[in-house]
Length: 446
Image (cartoon, rainbow, N blue to C red; front, side, top):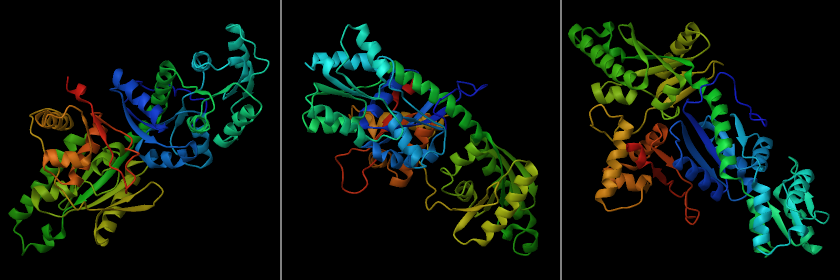
């Protein structure tokens, strides 16, 4: 996390990065639209909207664990999130600079606001004087409040309110919540917004910062997948050698199919278990961001067997194996949990078996499964004469004839593959938790 937002050296700018966008609804909408109009294949966006800047920490926590980097709408929400301890990943913000101030002054003149009697926040006195001198305006009576990290939206509002009380002509603010309150008070004002170029540059900076974070996703992980003991030699009277061998082959085949999709390696460990070498990023994808046990449902669906999984993370392969052995032993003792994970610190996390193993399936030859899903959804929407390409889990459930849980999982897979973007929920729906709409990126189909 850094305020200077410098690019890490040696990073490949083509690395795919998940960027969390934290801001008010108009800002988030601008970023999403900008990325859609450009080549955004190297980045995935996950938005989190707030109504007031004071809600920025909560908005940050909603997505912090799911992204490589955070991009904030401005310095105020960034600093509020920092002060609340909500930022645990690299982060930066869109600066209030460039053409934002000159554009706001011109807009103020168009609205009939006397620019020589303005109150302006989030700009330095020097910047204001340079802009006013350049356009031939006097700035003696212009009130300026430079941004400082110890200021909040209330202080900015008080600053502009004081100007109103003394007959100031109007206000220029960079804070959306302040602009909303000025509008309520019928105070002439202009919201100073960053230009498209500034947003684009901030996105590029965020991408480079996130590429460094994404490197952590390539960390080596070692998993042990163990067959039930009834397949072992001690139960030879219950199962023939042929049957035991058949079980091992069936499990091995199922693991190899998963490994091919996840870019991992499967190695036979002994008569009852296998090693799976994979990265932390692959593990998160296989376990829905560590919310359920990986491999378990795939093997159960393919063979009918309930396996146990132990996962180890460490700085060396030997330590990872030791942690994986501890984890698989722990998973065998934990009722209701089919997998355990031991972190490098030795901390143990138990992962439950998903209650539902059925997913939306696709059969389009060698086509990327996520792309096939996108194609299937677009075709279903087209068949239903629906022009828009925004859906939620309920609509996907109806279109694909699957459960809501499978629909949510399918939408998450589209987001992870870069074929959809989650959008902010409709603020008008206040009854319970509003559904999350998703923008399907039909243009990705080519």
